[in-house]
Each structure stands twice: as C-alpha cells, then as structure tokens.
Length: 244
Image (cartoon, rainbow, N blue to C red; front, side, top):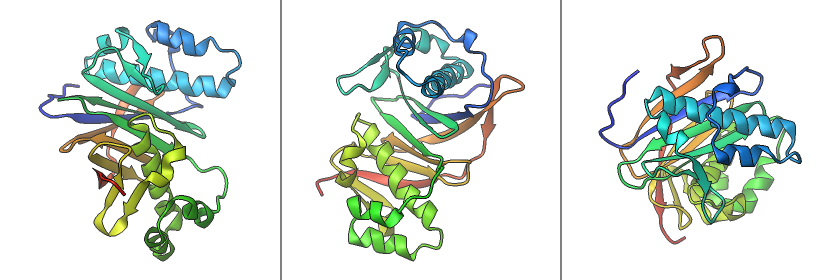
C-alpha cells in the first residue's frame, strides 16, 4: 500500500481483545517496558494497552514509517504519550472488547485524539446530560429517535476533544455542543474537526486539529496478521476554540 501525503491525513485502526496478535514482533522500546512492568495493572488492561501499541506500530509499518515507532515514545507534562519524532501524533482508546488508535502525519503541529465507547450496561442518559449539557442540547437529545446514538455523540466527542491536549473528563462541561450548527465550542482544545461513527461495533469519535484532513480506517485481520482497510461513514463536526 502506498499513500502520498500532500496534506495532514488521519488514520484510524481498531482490533478486538479476543483476537490474537504477534506481540513478539513489536519493537522493544523503553516506554513499553516501563508501562508493562507494573504488576498492579489488571491483566485485561495490560492486554488492551499492548494491543493499542501493537496496532499503532503495525499502522506505521503499513505506511512505511516503522522507524517512527523505533525512535521512541515519551509522556508530556499532562501525562499524554507522544512520539519522539515530531512529524506524527497519536492517541489510544479502549472500551469493553475493543481497542482503537488514531494517527496523523503532521503538516505543521496538528494534534489528534480518539474516544470509543462499547456500552456494556444501561446508562441514565438524561441524568448525565444534565451534568454537562445545555438546555438546548438536552432538548435536541430528547427529540432524537435514536437517543443512544445521540448521547454517545455528545459524550465521545467531548472526551476526544479534551484528550487532544491531555485534559480529562472532569472538564466535560467546558465543551458546548450546538447541534443545529454541527459545532462544538471550547477553550480546552484548538480549532479542528470532530469525526463520529455509530455503525461500527462501538461508537467512535476522533478529534483532528486543523482542517482538510482525509480519514483512512483499518481493522486488524487476524488470519492474515495484517490491517484491512475499511469504508466507514464518518459524520463531521467543527470544533471551535472560543470562550463559552
């Protein structure tokens, strides 16, 4: 596979924790040795993280950029992992049986972030919305036929937007959604775009700083031990850095 980079492009890859992965092929970089040496981490969480970094490495390999992974990963002051090589940014997310990774080859200094949700239990959507959403947004949610999808758009999008700069879910009320304008407003993230998909086995939200990015999606193909490109319908929303 060969992809020419003319503008910043975003790549997303996902896999299931019940699939098998040839972890022995993963380059032994110091960052991974550090995060996997903690025996206190639950085994399923360790597996989720290991799958995430394996998929990240595999995606770089498929793009002919494997050396980026070998150059190492560190954490910034907010605890957000990043490559030592500045020309790429990435982010990981996991929920239930699924793990997903987003990667961007930068034209300037674009950041990306991802959030997935694989709901395993029923949530009181309206109660949660009253914690972080405006009355206008709640009224919009109440009018939707598919309220599950509408809720996870509002939730996953906010998580992805906040993760772009290492912010946590505690700042969720600092992101405002205007459904009529297909816009999110916040001071907690730079201008960018939010991509959302609800047709996968999980809900997917991706934040990409800047504009004019093109998404390429892949899933892990266990039998061939390779990535398979997928066509995914992504809804696009604007993210605007503005005081609320």
